Image (cartoon, rainbow, N blue to C red; front, side, top):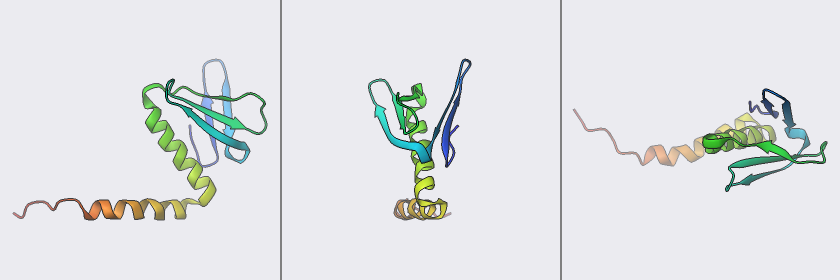
Length: 96
C-alpha cells in the first residue's frame, strides 16, 4: 500500500513500513525491477520486487512522494497543466 505518508508491505512472514519523513533516497534497479527504499532509522536498505507492475508501483510511489512534499493542490495543478496541452491536441470527433 502506498499513501501520501508511507509505503507499507504486508507479507506472509513479515510487514515492512517505509515512512516518507524518514526517507533518505529511493533507488530503482531496472535489471531486477526492484525499488530500494533507504530510510534514516535503518542501517540496511530494503525494498520491493514488484514484478510486472513495476511502472505502476513507481508511478504511485512518485505521486505519493510528490503529494507528501508539495501538497495535493500543487500536484493536482501540475498534473492538470501537463494534461491540458495533451487534451487540446486530441482530434475532434467527426461531426454527425
